[in-house]
Length: 234
Image (tube, rainbow, N blue to C red; front, side, top):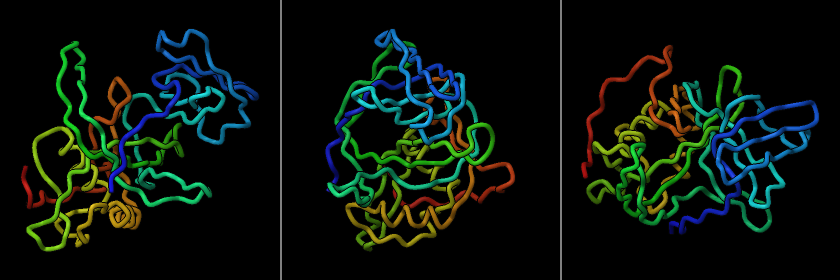
């Protein structure tokens, strides 16, 4: 069953990073954090690029969880879906999480409702350039359903931004839901993860000015697939 979405993150967001052989200094843009955070360079095993980036820090502010690109176009490849670990440190199967309804806010300050929904996160690895090896998360809505009581999974297609983002992710990461026979269940993510990893297709991810995944398209040398026929519409 999907788990309730809970956030337990510490400071995070756009930041300016400086690096010395011994120290990584992170100064978040938010006025909430006036002083920079400093971490031992040797303790952080991820990719470090000085300058502007997205940063995520532990709730106790003692650990640098991650640095990733802030904005621009990046060649990436799907790695895995985010998942939790059990009490013994073993990986649990990825599963969708329930996100409660909330009020969102556009760039011009106007608000809009965001309905309760299921969500999951695709972790993608940058394959080229300065940020090669860094992980970029893509939060996706769980737009799947059973196809006409067949016991198979169908992707829910529509014109909303969340449906378009999921559709482009699946197509360009190498999985065409019209061609794949994924058994329907409350959680198809383990099966979908396996197929995406087997496809191993590189694609182009655009991060907008706020650092969020905006568009997904084919890598220039990957070619393009013909438009697929859609099954489910909502």
